[in-house]
Image 1 (cartoon, helix red, strand yellow):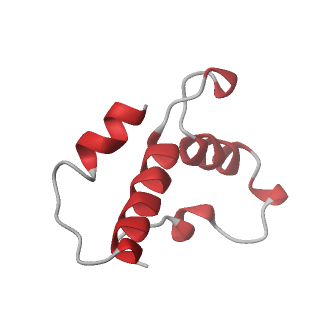
Image 2 (tube, rainbow, N blue to C red):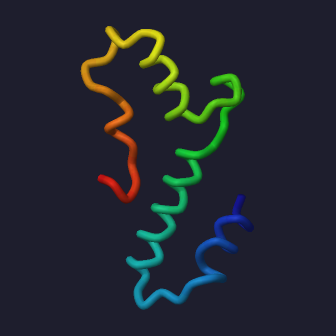
Length: 74
């Protein structure tokens, strides 16, 4: 995992400040965790699992989780 983080951040980009590196690292880790498929969720990402539950049991949710997707549209 450390090699993956280094290759995706420090070795590929130049940072003007330590804070800029911290922000990019946090963004990378958030994206990694968001897109990771988990065995406990039967191979689904956490977001896919929530959407699947929403379609089968919409009464358990207050708002539509599809509108809560992080990314460029937030």
